[in-house]
Image 1: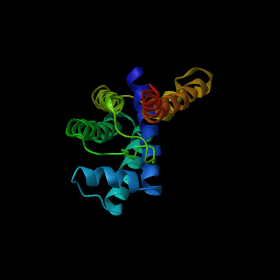
Image 2 (image 1 turned 45 degrees about the vertical axis):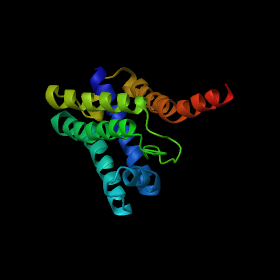
Image 3 (image 1 turned 30 degrees about the vertical axis):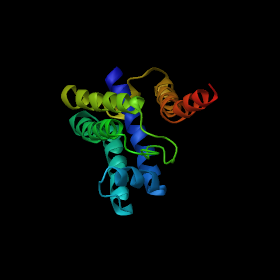
Image 4 (image 1 turned 90 degrees about the horizontal axis):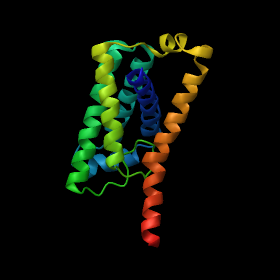
Length: 173
């Protein structure tokens, strides 16, 4: 059940991240440009649309199709972040939250690898779409939806706010 829950959580993150890229492509464009990759607004829009599609496939279909979409989205993200960190690229943001102050970190790598792994698990072992999963949950799935919401917020804190807090603490020391 952990892999299914993590895949649903990861899918919601894709919906948020994809929407953020469509609203403000600049952070992602800057990250791609720093890595020497195509970085036009159209490229970022296509990436955002893919993220929304992949997240929707996980939540709407699940199983091997959704799992493969999740894996094929998060595995390259993890690779890109590892490349950026090892190369010391001057990236101010990966664009995942549409903000210019969420630089990629080791935490990003871990979250992306967990998401890719849950996608692989879903693709190989199967797993329900969101509606099927909610039907199997107690209390009509309300606690499960709460888990997803709390998980998204916790990951936002981990990936966006914790690095800023640590940097502030380091600057004061």
